View 1 (spheres, chains in turn red, cyan):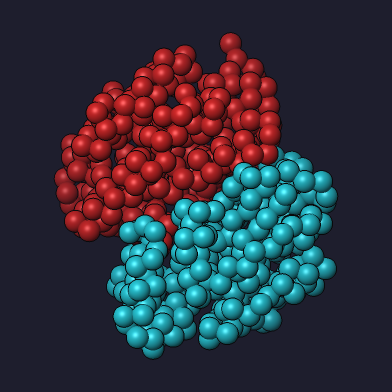
View 2: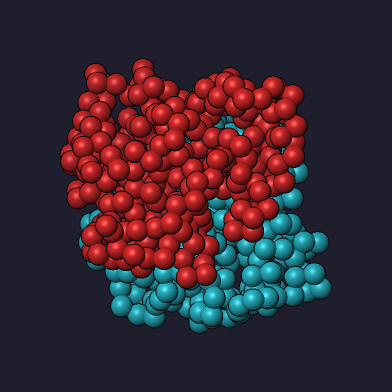
Length: 261
Length: 253
């Protein structure tokens, strides 16, 4: 039994941005109320949910009347509110390193995983509806930016240029940052931290989506780290929350890439 | 030893300059002339291989990412707090920072490049521009600069950017109706980021931000600008951006 907190987390599957706070709460042994939001049924655009987060994005953490959004900031909020079992170093440099990893995950992997996964997502969506139904549902998304993102990524599909850009950006991050860091350290910032959880929730997609880049020959340190992650009880408990089989087969569109550069 | 590599006090360079002045921390200033692409010269790339300014070097440790740099400055040094005490207000501060850095700032910057900055480079010999671009360390950054200089933004992107500026002005105004500073009752890093990202709004986009339609936003910008520390940072302007014919306060890509 974990520590009672009064927190409620609205989340989707234990992967991507929903996986991050789930993993953070599990690592810290904190109890919370779980509210599952079925993103493929567009529950994130229901009026009740938009009242919590007008951007129509998961996850959202409710605590003491506040609705905290954005995985990176939910993680830091939980860390600052419940500092026991620290998931950030105590020194300013170490904390900056964790935040820099969070930012790089947010900007350099997260938006591109869903681009690379769109074919799988589209067939998943069309398993339970016709293309016309899907089109109507997307056109009814009430949040303009989300509607545009679903339209361009799922209805129209990413252009070849966008897929190539996604491959380039993720490869640059893997080769330039992640593999070199894990060659030196067991965990990204030395000790296990929020940085590892954030990266794990997105990098776990890549052996399948970008197998020519992330594999035992090219990136042995990343593969060994993924196994170390999966050996952690908190990771196992978090992945056991999946309702769809392997959650790393599913990625919804978003977040939007930083718009230029 | 604390060294800051920076250009003029606006956009990303302005953030740590203002944070350090607010904190009252002395630092060694290394001026990087962005319009002359000094951030892509070998000497600078040894400090920051990404070729981006600003960079903070504290006792030999390299700290990058201007907004995270401000949180680092607040944690590493004594002086007035630049972040609210409560985790809840901090989350609000960070959400503003993210929005301003990732949505609002790039939208403003995109329009500024298309309307004001790109044409200036396009008046330069193409071979000269290409030789400057060739020094940029990564292909991704080279693409970004080409897009900016040659106005190769995707169809509809500029309209969407303008729409986002209007939305941003409304969000700022609504927030400032509730509290005097973006994260709540006290000045914070969100106000520094906001000033650096939105400070040019009234001058460049007066139809969006003005005394009639967004009075609180105008008052807030003035409140930030009149702080002694902000004035001290602004006094470090050496005019590289103006000398290059660029109106100040727009980020480089």
